[in-house]
Image (tube, rainbow, N blue to C red; front, top):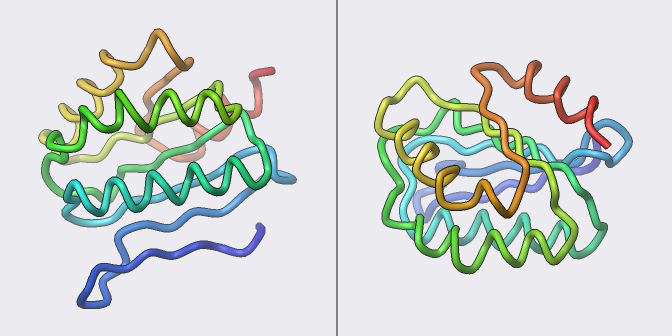
Length: 137
């Protein structure tokens, strides 16, 4: 695994990590705790920076440890982040859904908004998401 990026909230809590795995063929991001518009954008822009530095068509995005909804950032994710990520080379998005019903509903709403732009699948476990990403392309 390449060097891991870690983003923290003002009080030091880690809310996001990202690293390249499987010979740089997948970017693996993990989100933690309660998210805000600011944290979603900060993590999203970090992913965009990573994919622009070294193009990658696959993102494993784990929301397994997210608490609550982050639907206030959906408009940005749909209108800014998704088109920019696609332009930078992203084609496949594996979303690992959390146990929180609110965060899961937010992810389902995002998928409904962007599923024509990227090929997206949802999973309960990171291992299944990784297996799917390794099977495509």
